[in-house]
Length: 271
Ligand SMILES: NC(=O)c1ccc[n+]([C@@H]2O[C@H](COP(=O)([O-])OP(=O)(O)OC[C@H]3O[C@@H](n4cnc5c(N)ncnc54)[C@H](OP(=O)(O)O)[C@@H]3O)[C@@H](O)[C@H]2O)c1
Image 1 (cartoon, helix red, strand yellow):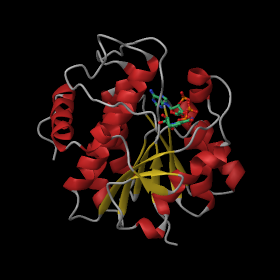
Image 2: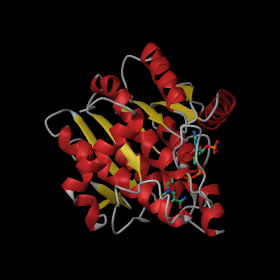
Image 3: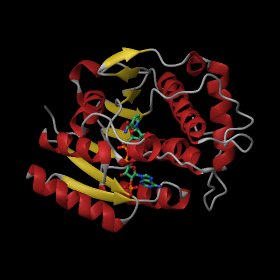
């Protein structure tokens, strides 16, 4: 299989870290992303040791900072001629409502705003890749409704509500982006990795969960499985395309969300 250039956000720990190992082992060039230089470089060195692969690079940005995301992207454009796969994996769940320096509720910022911004900024690099793929790691924890007037849960915050809302928004972004790219050589899909024993799961729901190897399985599938080359706009669980919550298919809500996101980020019309 041809070597692919793959950026995985949040690959210093958990499912992203394991996915970086698996994709490096199968001969791809993996760009390990972490919140800062020290963490990203350390994780890359550990992955080098485990895999004996020297096809590794690292990149860093705190995904809660749009200026750091922009700096990382500009660095990536300088260092790479193309990107074949972007895996938006990094994610958090917060017990209490916290707001970042840009005034955004943090779960919403990391789980949804960051992938939206990063993906849009990397599109020109992805367009230079071969049959490029955008893979968004979401969750089976989804909302039944998406109130676009209260995206940041100013009124009735709970950890699970905020997490579900952010993942529901990311699924909607996946579907609308896939639709916008339907005539181009870029696919956009999302997936639930399973209930996996990571620090995110332990923080939110206590112990339990399957192994990291189980968790990385669907990410690897979505990123490189040859049979998915032309498959786009899907939600995968356990390597199977299944339906997400009904609200995620509402095109009017998808469009409103997109517009609101551009407003939040102060972007001109993106696509
Ligand atoms: N575990 C599950 O059962 C489960 C189920 C469904 C979906 N998911 C999704 O799977 C993805 C991976 O989660 P995980 O369970 O592997 O969690 P994890 O072990 O906590 O790993 C999360 C990764 O994201 C990074 N990250 C978090 N905030 C960041 C920020 N502000 N800037 C840069 N990087 C940041 C973390 O870096 P640090 O280590 O520096 O914090 C870490 O590398 C998430 O999107 C999660 O929602 C997980």
